[in-house]
Image (cartoon, rainbow, N blue to C red; front, side, top):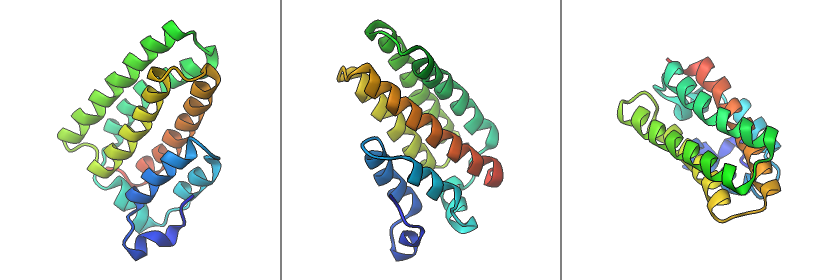
Length: 154
């Protein structure tokens, strides 16, 4: 997982978070979440930038409603197809909010990577238990980012 000193050596918080997302879906996400929550003001503002609280809330609501459905219901393959469509809608919303400059490009990239990981899980027909686990990881990660957005966003 990432150490907070990385950003001072030329590795941005966003770059490190993207690497962590890739690893977190394979390993333990708790350390990544803890690291996100202990970012200093400068690092948090680098990640969050000019992100609007309202814009993030809209994305968070759409994504987490789909994730919660996966987590609660342990859906069938057919239901997962519908959920992948909801996640694709979330990708569109993230792009839209980024284009409107309501979400920074760094944060949008992080969110899109999380969505793409989940869509890949579904389209590659991974075991439902893996999809559920990754949905739980994604939900926790999005909630940790929400804390930063509410603390540092506009």
